[in-house]
Image 1: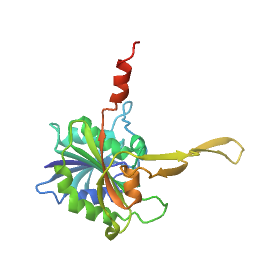
Image 2: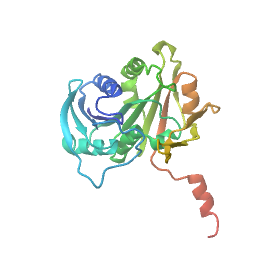
Image 3: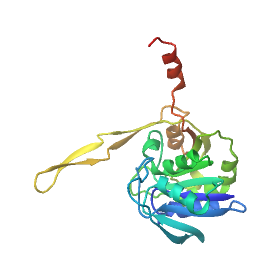
Length: 254
């Protein structure tokens, strides 16, 4: 099985090593790691169009690897060009340093890596560690244990064209994991997301971030699953068409 691995936390991120080690447990895995040369979090599904991309060879977990001065989408496309011009069998993205729940998916470079694999017609999976307290342990050992036990089940799951899997693993001890749930996207929004500050000369500047508000009231969602110590697996479709609204619009005169 030919596997391309990427992330948005950069080539030196611990989560990338975790994902690579888990992928190595797949029988006959041929692995290439292509990741940004530095952190590119919250870059969304951006790509580099107006600058050249440079890729430097390296080794990660005894696997051939490249560090690219671009975004996760760039890494997927560069990796396919270098090693898998006819496509590969699987794209893995992560393991992200933090959750990608609900609307986070639209900002996430981790999700974007899997999305680009999906656009190229390749089964793809994004994986994140759901830690909500700054400075708290990320428990990558939990992520690695869960992935090692489940990765062959994951690649065997039935999906449709233009769909990738978005997985969030609670950042807790492995014995505290309550199980796995298949979920829909929940609501995870940010309040007071832009803060106005002043520099030493009294000139205003703006710092974007905000306070995360979790709304785990719907038991079918990824947010609810993580809040209750379950791993969440959410199938994400690249077809963003709202079919119900489309049908209503077509039924009206315009």
